[in-house]
Length: 437
Image 1 (tube, rainbow, N blue to C red):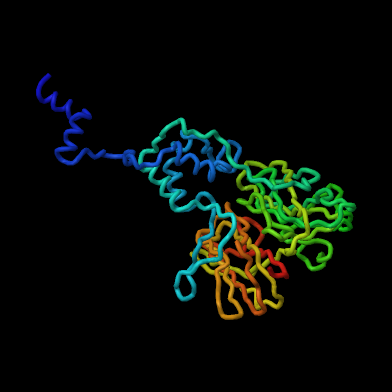
Image 2 (image 1 turned 45 degrees about the vertical axis):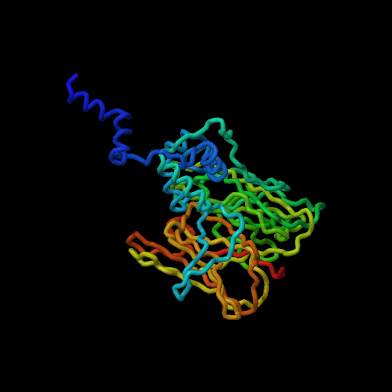
């Protein structure tokens, strides 16, 4: 072998690379992630527990995540996407920011929320370092078996559903339908207090949102007589009309991203003996080739002992909205007006559609102080959630709540308020009690 060929051969060997390392400072790879070092986190023992605890409930076969992340090979194949998603706090889905910028352009903290899904800064750093370090596997003896957590109600005291399936006719992309369930509380069981629920959509890709009402036994009979199939065409907010005040009441709202809803400790929504549940479902067909038959179910959990604070769910909407064509970051605002009844705010659920960009709600206290109730700087229609506060917000006479909705309109037509997915909403739901802790 010639000296030139020997030289080329030696350049390709680890021996010469090691020699050059001591002589001139090392060998640098031309492309690719930084190689693993002794400080690079390993999959087994470090990264796998983070993924199991925070990702696999959705990212498994049959889950709502678009691909599974149940083992090393699956996560490694999506490593770059996983890194981007956690660095940009897109995943796990927890949209609220801890801070907001006030009118004086100063950064302030928002009120603390329960049940945060957000990763810690250290967890994000570990995932990023693992990907940058070449996704090293580590010691397989530290492997944990696939066992995603399943969020469930502590008890299921009523398991209800639509009494007949419904298939949208497909003539328009949006279909609005109401369903009367079987009796939720037997007359002899007495009154109850709802402390949590879980709605299970039959065809998840088709269910846009669900408003969940309690309806009295007497009203349920009227509806059953009028609609023998126990389902009928309706519209969003069908029972918001004041004439139904003594016959029905809003229990909750399901939107994409919602799973189990638990009301804060010592709170609940009153339900009467003989009550039924009515589900007002908005279907959207854009994600399907053709409509499917849907049977959506709901599970209820009742208090084991009387709660201290009865909740009511109040809606706050700004329906006078017109987002001009081509506008970006367009602001629509509304105030509740000064409160005339003291109480406590326990939770909040913002709602917009696909053109929503950001959402913020603040409260101006009667003593002149302000606070951020929620700040979602990057709105994601697919991950809307109900948020409860770690400590309830005390509401005083004269307090005023302001809702700010920001929109981008990439179309050539104005966007206005409407029920369709292609329309928009600037809407908030508040969980309020008129007693204070």
